[in-house]
Image (cartoon, rainbow, N blue to C red; front, side, top):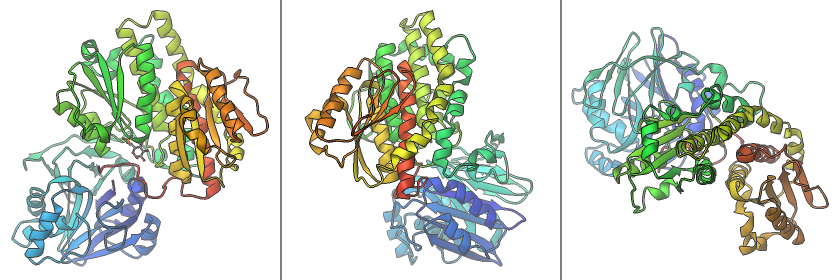
Length: 608
Ligand code: G6P
């Protein structure tokens, strides 16, 4: 996690650094800091809390070269002394995203050399290491390269030196960093959203790259230290896509962007007459012929998307599927089946556990890998043979919304392509599914119209401490996702159960203070679900039911029914997600929490 920005320009870079950090706050927001070089001195400003505080504190700081950081604490509590940039002897300053695994050993060595540590972070060793080479005759680039050779772990860094106002060094291994190319000015950042304010031109640095930025030019060196050229791309993002616009929060904006995000994700398919494996990459048809099972690996919300996909894959494509939390899979002994397709799902494409699980799967003998991901240049995309990009656009709210529904759309496409290839889908069924997918964005738009009603309903949750979410079958993972959304942003303890499990324990918790939210699609399990709801009502539990048309579930004493449109068949989980997102959002508003940046969390979890 953590976000970094760096700039070298003829103008004052402080506003650029601060604006960049504001864009990267989703990566961590417990403290922030920046340093600029001017008059052959390092001028550092740090603050605990949000970037807005840093902006105030640095309002009178100026400089033409600098680096900045927004932090999600890993080593050392959030505090000013642990905030980046970290400095060595007022000469070297470093910002870092990632974790240095051998920092204790390095800290001992550096302490023995006389370095005094001013923080509890792993990052400070990098500053002192670079300093030790710099004061031994290496230039800034050489010192950084020599220091990096000593590090074990993951990093993206920015480095400046007090006596070198012309050069800024960036480097990455395991954590993201890109280079922004301007007119007579250059930048580094953890992601492009931080740089749209100054340029659209971007160079995606490769693993192990070190870059030296100056006003007029830049030089890139690969992991072996050989100077290399990397292509300059024009970013497809624009500043508007990361602006809040008419909305109060990014989460609300992103909930409303779902029709468009789904339309974008489905564009290539919906415009064609049939489904082809090629949408997953040129080698997909061959790979899909060779597989006999699926293993899905993911974390958080992406894991819930995988759980929905399992129902689809087994029912429609008749292919056995296992879904596992990436952080569990990577550390257990498992048996690799070379005929399994390993599917990783990740919004960011850089979640450390998912990436490690993918590499673990490959290491133990899995041959076929496919990534469903929202970030084209991400590590997970680059390390997978096959891929389908969700085209949700930048997701900034920490609670994932449009990334989830677009992941579902992508996984449904995977299901259909595999079903077709395995002879489980005739032409008429294929056309029907394509028709339903084309209709999906407008169906989501219709569900969004429930917003005012849900906003009212949310008032009844504001004073509650617990909530139970129920779903069955395909909609059980949706109940899980609804509970996750509520707990993440409103801090109400929420649990989800498959409704049939109620009587095996959670029913004991039900009373008038425990609202029970039920996902009630008009599917084959409806009558079973209705019985489960009776069990809740009989114990005095208050029900909040999101019911499809024609389910014949009506509002009554203690039963609040939100009317959903007609049942959407296999795509129903996507529609039923929307009101649960809105419910969490409006409950959080009632409670006055920081919706887009809930406490203790971060969006991109690049640590274990
Ligand atoms: C964090 C985010 C979640 C996300 C999870 C996995 O916990 O807060 O919203 O679902 O990471 O992230 P990924 O980028 O791999 O989907």
